[in-house]
Image (cartoon, rainbow, N blue to C red; front, side, top):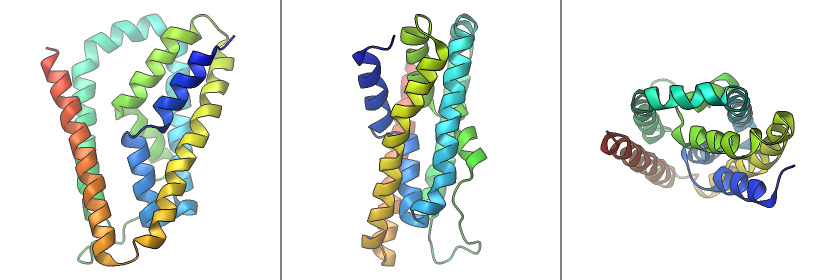
Length: 195
């Protein structure tokens, strides 16, 4: 059975700022809530798939994670740097191609290089999936994660009305890009200092 610590941990990890939530807020600002729903669904499904994989193959995952921690982190950092650049450039008037929100599959694929998502699902798998029904843990995980990420997408959508002028939108995108860049720097430093 799932205990209160499970609910607390998954909720806190799902609602605190991280790559997924920054991406959702930025997409909400730039594309609105409805056009952000595919990436939100991709994030939810991607995390659920990660949770299932981590739970079912826990022993293998622990061995594998130790071997690929640095390459996975560096690949994730590279992707986050690219994403920071895309966020920074979002809505720029000189952009020749109109930006589009990330797709459902893009949101799912993003989870593969999202270190915070891997940390969250690995901890849940370690602490709860090994001693509870995997499907109960997965259902509880998704049920707690969904309202948290919906909040970030809705927050971005609500901010959209306040960020209609070019300079405000540009400032917001720059701050989001710098936040993601700082997160990337922290993760890269942490990974390299663990060597």
